[in-house]
Amino acid sequence: MRISLAWQILIGLAFGILIGALFYGNETVQGYLQPIGDIFIRLIKMIVIPIVISSLIVGVASVGDIKQLGRLGGKTILYFEIITTIAIVVGLFVANIFQPGAGVDMKTLSKGDISSYVKTTESVESHGIADTFINIVPTNLFESLAQGDMLAIIFFSVLFGLGIAAIGERGKPVLAFFQGTADAMFYITNQIMKLAPFGVFALIGVTVSKFGVESLIPLSKLVLVVYGAMFFFVIVVLGAVAAMVKVNIITLIKILKDELILAYSTASSEAVLPKLMEKMEKFGCPKAITSFVIPTGYSFNLDGSTLYQAIAALFIAQMYGIEISIAEQISLLLVLMVTSKGIAGVPGVSFVVLLATLGTVGIPLEGLAFIAGIDRILDMARTAVNVVGNSLAAVVMSKWEGQYNPIKAEEYRRQVS
Image 1 (cartoon, one colour):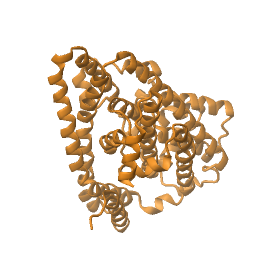
Image 2 (cartoon, rainbow, N blue to C red):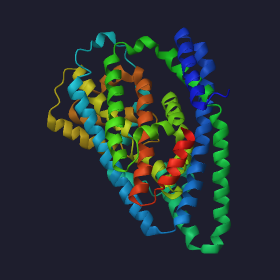
Image 3 (cartoon, helix red, strand yellow):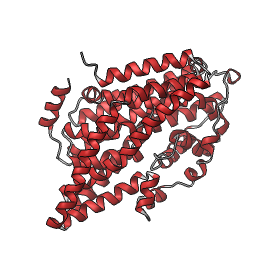
Image 4 (cartoon, helix red, strand yellow):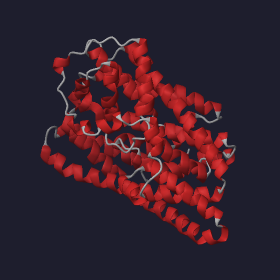
């Protein structure tokens, strides 16, 4: 009997936790496991940009209508802003009700190291809405490719696709090249995914071995509140959005179970981007919309990350006994709406955003050191929520544009169920 990829990843996750717990603090074991996890993540990152470029160029060239793409872009950004704002509001609401930081004894917590995040904070603090839109236009495409600047890559790919469509017959050989590139990259993706259980095993093993299961105990209330809020947001908020476009959120989660387990285990949205685009296309979304919406969502639609940032900010304030007024919470919401956009490429993005925004409402930055040790555990949850949010966005935009194919979606649902 063949074991499905989802079960293989779960088995890898379980064994990784077991090995990490057994060899807690053993740097030798960490040294053996870390390269395996790093190789898997590097393999994924290797294929992301070629897939985004080739899929987007093919999708845009097949549409060839600059007005339609402009309309899609405007609707997409509007939708992302509304959903991420709701995510921040939910995070603030939950943190105020459950008070995860109240009564936490800071003496029982071992401070983590946040020095690796601090060096990127200044760039985020000066990162406004104007900067985000200016940086969408690349000055050097190859520099953007080297830096993995997804928004600039998307901008160039859209223009290039429109150029291919505009020159008609002369553009067909170029279009055929990128179609072949996309097909080849998806084949490579399927081969790399066979290594996912080993990558998950190594990555989670290193995490548990470094921090230990006991590191969760003093901060267990924060973990429970964050996970509970994530569950509520997916089932209730995203569930309501899905219902509005006549899609069942549970069905979507079932279809994406392999990708969600992988995203959760690796705490990396990039790890599932290629398969996510492929599956949403099979689920009735046209290639042009899927290729544009999902990669863009990786910068503008980080639902799980923004929800977590709101909770973490109030958690630290509560831990220090600082009262945050409604006005200050609104200020925090507005700042997070700006700073959380367009910086998905920054390592530990949620942590960096918090570092850049806590000072605006007088919350001590040092408080982040107390949750640095469990950030990986929280990152796993917010990554999975980001994946669900961006997948649903592709469906919403397809419906909004009147291009969603419910018959194709139903056939695929029956196929995977």
